[in-house]
Length: 109
Image (cartoon, rainbow, N blue to C red):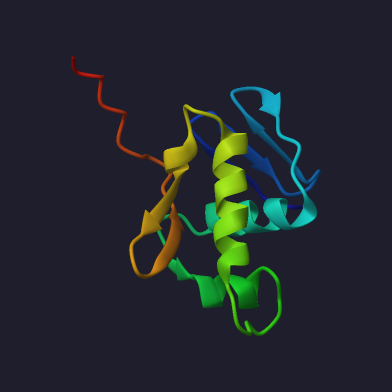
């Protein structure tokens, strides 16, 4: 049986290959699904871009690894304004899935 992961309003169903946020199904590409599912399956573990290329894309990284950054940016947009912090950037290292990100601070005037 394929695993299902839940974090806040995020549900990743690996059996049906569906991901939803707050009850709304996301339209993801194959690689976006694979990337998010991998990160969610290993919460709080920090992955370098190189590691993600090897584990998710299953290829040795050569040259520009900005494709990982582009996929992360698209995933954050698709997760919506209430959930982009689920994917945490670790400066100078890579990315991690944070199932309990700090709540957004209220705007100050």
